[in-house]
Amino acid sequence: MESQDLRKAGLKVTHPRMRILEVLETASPKHLTAEDIYRHLLENGDDIGLATVYRVLTQFEGAGLVLKHNFEGGQAVYELDRGQHHDHMVDVDTGKVIEFTSPEIERLQHEIAAKYGFEIEDHSLVLYVRARKKK
Image 1 (tube, helix red, strand yellow):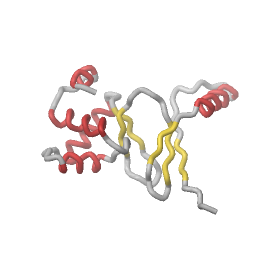
Image 2 (spheres, helix red, strand yellow):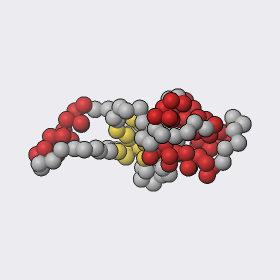
Image 3 (cartoon, helix red, strand yellow):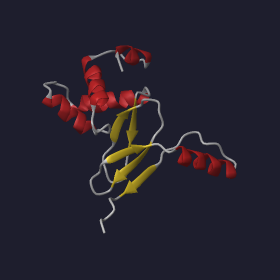
Image 4 (cartoon, helix red, strand yellow):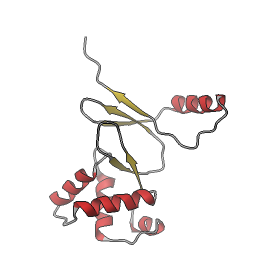
């Protein structure tokens, strides 16, 4: 994402917004808490406060630039909205978030909604998982 993406979203291009976008773009893992972003900024010499990080993330979410996830048992995490639908698995032991896509699951969801007379407008699928114990 670039400065024109901020302008298209109706946001002024500011140093904090650009830096937070950069952190989200280069993040590994892709799902970060506001505190993760703040820590990264501090480690790289940026003087951007935690309140500013939260405010910018809220603005980005409102503008459709980021997605906010509230996975059970954890803090809210943010990721750039790259426009490609995917679902998530959350490891209940480590908190690690794994993205996946499954055309079969997508098809089944639409079939189930249709069976009950509905069309899916939007959805979120989160699987809470635990690593299998080795036998």
